[in-house]
Length: 142
Image (cartoon, rainbow, N blue to C red; front, side, top):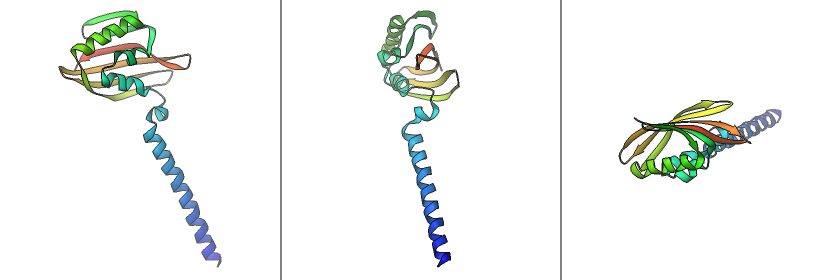
């Protein structure tokens, strides 16, 4: 009888651990930006969709922008217009982050596939008022 009770307790404990691990795994895959805490998903979706307005919503007041051979420091509105012009000529159909890191400030490097070529995208984010803001965005031919 004692052996049966111990077996039942062991099985119950294993079942509980399995459930906790399963919940953690599901959380990790459903909410990847929460698990890394670095790159807001809206930036990734905006770059993939070629939506300058969505990406620019995460720009700092002044942003260092390098798009192909054009390099400047500009306002959020100017940066949005430059990015919009880029998306008109190079409509993306895929964007994936290939590397990301950082603690106080975070960065990401990604590959953007467009109808007119592939590009490497780099952006640097800093936290301002609890929000991640892009302070530097670079788009180069791959």
